[in-house]
Length: 102
Image (tube, rainbow, N blue to C red):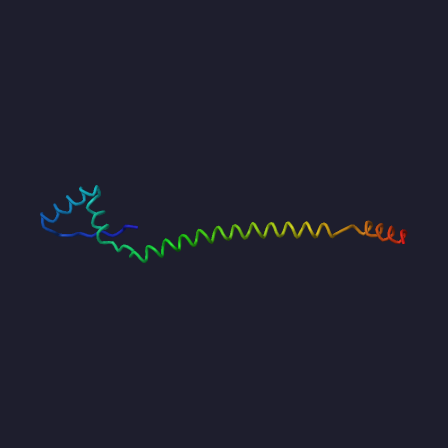
C-alpha cells in the first residue's frame, strides 16, 4: 500500500525529462519513478516463484485425487462389510440345510 510521499527538488530540465519519459511510456511521473527504482525480483527469484506456484497447483490436484481415492476405498470397504454381514437367521437356515443334506 502506498502511504508515503517523497518530495524531490530538481532542475527544470530533469523535471521535463521525467515528464517526457512518463508520457512516452503512458504512465504518471510517480509510476515511472516507482517502476525504475522499486526492487524487482531477480530471474532466479522469479523462477522460484513460478515453481512454487506450480507446486502449489499440483499439490491441490494431488490432494483432490487422494481424497477421491479414499472415498472410493471407504465405499468399497462399506460394501464388503455389508456383504459379509449376513443375518443370523440366514446363517441358521444354511447350517440346517447342510445338516439335512448330510
